[in-house]
Length: 621
Image (cartoon, helix red, strand yellow):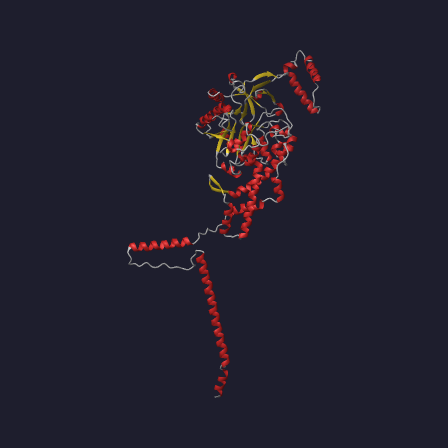
């Protein structure tokens, strides 16, 4: 009994049982409340999915197809199942695959980093003032900046479609928004908006900057990017400018390039219908591999006039080819011009120019210092202009250029031959043609102005071809040169002609009877002179490559007085410019005098090519 009493004392009291029951009830009610909350939350998600056109995320099982059904019944069930699947897919929005485009993101970041500040933008977009060399220098500085921004702009917009196709992404705002909503690293909406705003600021800046540098390309091309892309995959070809007066030369040239084995397509660029008659256009278009194109609609020359020599760089730029051999209509070839594309200097630089005659010395160093931004390139320091050897550096009868590589440089050359070409003395305006001889020097100078030093001058020399006249050098001349050299070595620097005369007379009087006289021992070398309007360009080996000036003795003479020249030999300009003797006559005729070592005879094959040129020309002149 005592043990039972102890057991009863250990059993829970009625109060304890009541408290335990209360806790159980609270726990059940709490669990029920939580379940209700979960249910309501799930139901709200379900309703929201229906409002957005989505099905609730749940696993569905395909109903088994009874095996006793016939084939038509099976096909009907299968069709219904597929229809239901298509309906379900139609209700679900298609979601792009989340991928990263590293090149695009890098190009976009470069654009954001390149956006100029307010002060820099004001300077670059400010109207270019001044005249002459100072204005060209300022244009060059701006063009160098434009080249930097233009590269960033193109890298963002160009999309490669294959080995021979490139496209411009024109829906950039939409593309940015869509891209950052589907990539692995989602960008916040506010960050995407900031990126779009930056892009639009850059676009507005580039539109104004492009108009300032070269606004004359529109409206034919919407912007410089469209012009640049138009010839990226354009291949190689020959470009010639011509009007009615040049058609006889042009037809001869077309036959000539085919005779020497050249199969490149040819584009003949004329200004407008007043420049070349419509019937001539049709006649040229009918030739195999020849396309005639009007250039006037492509250029907005409001405020200036596109004409004459100035047409040449515009014809190069607006031709459809990427790599161009530009040829003057009165130029002719001894060898296939296509080989110029394989020249090692062209392969390296993408631009190949030809040297002009080394005519009279002209000091251009101070002018170049005013013209070109610092630092002056090594190619300028080695030029005739800088060293004072001549004011004639380049001859533009043939120009070889890869326009894709040198797009900004070509824009600069066109501007120099366009809006900046002519001066006005009354208004104190100095034009490009007031400072250089026509279009020919604007190519290498245009390259230098925009900081593009990837160009080279062909390593072959220049010459004049025709009939050489010979005469011995006078002994006084020999002694004069000898005395001059001795004086230079002594530092005296000038010749006393009276002393020279006495020296010669004394040498004659003092001759001994048993010794040969000074006159007899001095073997007078021969000098040769050729006068002709044709300027001949040579290969690196010194053989004829091409020449300009046509085939007539005087292409400016009346038609009844015109005669074809004869070209059995040529005199080459020596490498030592101090011994070069040029004389410029009228009618674009020049005389070159050289010693015996610089006179050469055309080979029979070369003479045959000249004869073939003349046979073609006789049909058109």
